Amino acid sequence: MRRGFSLLEFMVVLAIVGVLVALALPSLGSNSCRAAETEAKAILRGVATQQAESWAKNGMFAEVKASCPKPKAGATPCIVPTVTGTPTYKVTGTGGAKKWTASAVGIAGTRAAGSVWQADQTGAINDVAKICRSAP
Image 1 (cartoon, rainbow, N blue to C red):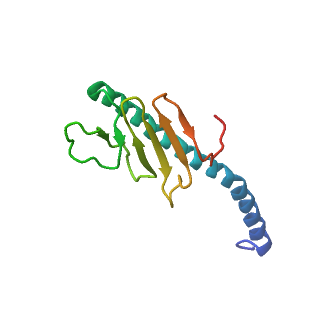
Image 2: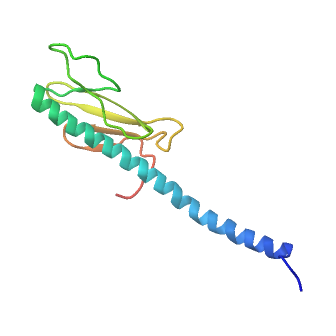
Image 3: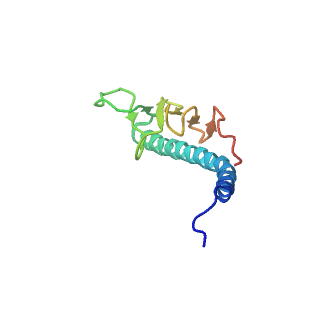
């Protein structure tokens, strides 16, 4: 009685596994890109909420920074975007009496690398770099 597998049987199984992996990889890349898109949109929606609060409290939109110094009288307010976990985007923006803009730029070495998203007071969130090109 023979025990184990022959080399030919092992090679056939290896080929089948290779084909399955080749079919799965494009799907995984697309999911990672969509996850990065969702993260950028969530961060920028949070900035929009913080800007609405700044407008209600101060009568002007705030600057968006990684950290804010102690507020000084008459200075433009400052907000820090809410990011949970390991950051994949660097978020910056400007504020003023009539409008605000914020950008989320993907950090190199993360799944968001090369991705650039922008938002403004109109509520629009735009994919500037168009890296993923996924369907809406």
